[in-house]
Length: 142
Image (tube, rainbow, N blue to C red):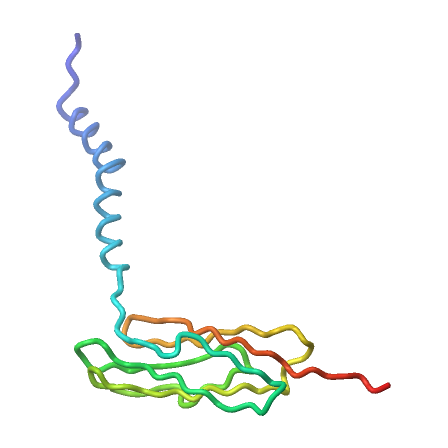
């Protein structure tokens, strides 16, 4: 039986390492970095509005549950969801920031419910708050 050259043996081991061991090691490293612990607590977790009755704004209260000050932001991509303010700067640990949410019912047409999201971030953590709206019912004149 012929012996392999020591360099070829080394290359074979290197290829095996790159193909099988290195991806597993990198997976563990990236998995640890992707695990982001919550830094905020949001209440309520969802909002519901009804444009057929007198509409009132609602509040979302965000609590900083981290050990350091956080900038907390809230935004919505749907133009019919209005969030004010959009940012609270340097909320201390266990401090809160409140966001007022209202709906522009004039932009909603039809009878099917509208669903959107408010995205709230604090530190490296973010969470969606679903917003469900029952639009106004419009009757055509006879």
